[in-house]
Length: 529
Image 1 (tube, rainbow, N blue to C red):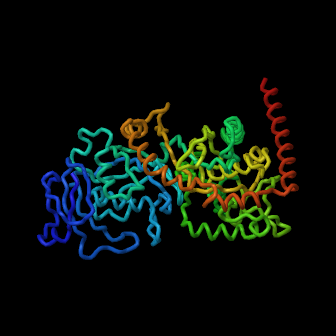
Image 2 (cartoon, rainbow, N blue to C red; image 1 turned 90 degrees about the vertical axis):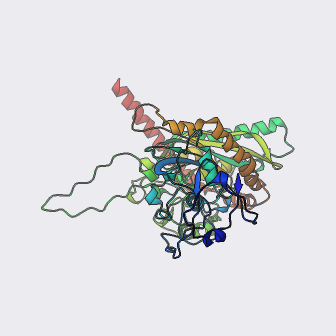
Image 3 (cartoon, one colour; image 1 turned 180 degrees about the vertical axis):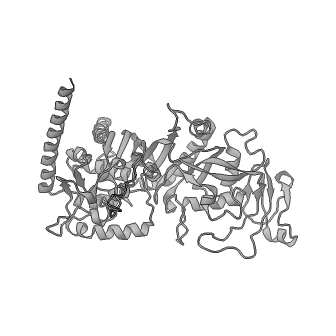
């Protein structure tokens, strides 16, 4: 039942904690936004304190007219989908900005529904908030899993094993472009460490890879087959250091300490495991720092590159920070490709730069809002910052014959340092993921996560959101003659090139390394026999 409230009338009676049942409420005739909540939950009115805390760490409590009655606090997992076009990304940020983040909206909605106490609002650490992956500005999701400690109503999952009712209550406080699909109890779920598979989709206008509207079916199939061959080069386990900001995933080597009593201090042993940040599948598409900081830093690193090579900051990511830029020591030119002949302590590649791609393929030609497009499916264990967008950008450049085909193989070699193009973010979608308990042998999945991923009721809700909300909004970015594609393609075509001398040097060095590596492997194999 939809219910409307007028808070000022309630405050006249000084009933700050009036308890009532939704089914017994009278509908007000005031022009107030209607709020839909499951009638099984008992709700209470609430008014903000007279002196709200306005500090940055604890923002003012938002006005809410309806809350469920908290019964107890319980660890839960929540599946969320959102269209990221109008947000600065997923991760909550307390700084003032004209654009909100998805977690800002979620926190407020959960608080208004009664899932977060007043004393905990504004501090996600207090409720042990954790996510399975992060997305950057403009990136979308259908499968973000968030765990936290929520104040739940009594009989929260009675006759609702898929957690749809709680989700609907929170959705009544969310904008249409964010939706909670399900909320289920979960005792000790760790969304980052237990996520072992992530699937992304990238919707690419067909014209970008040379498919014209007047083409025959045979011509279309030829282009799709050719593009698929390019994409498949990424499959397998490789060092993707050229497809991210390398320094973010580089292990910090502590400075050598002075000996004490003639003895050198012991170095801490490395566990060999990836950290939580390294495991977190962000494509990254989001950094831990503010976007403005990254933009200014990136502009500085690419100033020379843009001047001489024509690459703008919106097209190419330098691949690293100031200290790691590919700059020729004897000139002001930024080198677009080079080979590390000797170890470089300032530009080390570690195990965290290696990622496993299970599948990277392109589907059939599709159409939405009159625009032809293809869906690129990329699945892997985890992804680094900008990895997927640089994979797509490089594949497009190869398909358009702007980069040679062997750049794919060379760029996935740990001794190469190559600057690669970065594709737009507006059409990237996190489609799905799976979870396993890594501490147990075999692929053991928590029952609640199995429900989240496989429940027909939940998947039906996810599909409805994708078709009715997400796809129509994302389809606005499928017109190749408009933003972001028009400018991106113009710059890509005009400036994507690697000087022949640099390219040839890297090729020759790669061939020598390959021959030496294969010779060593062959010798080891014969010796073992």
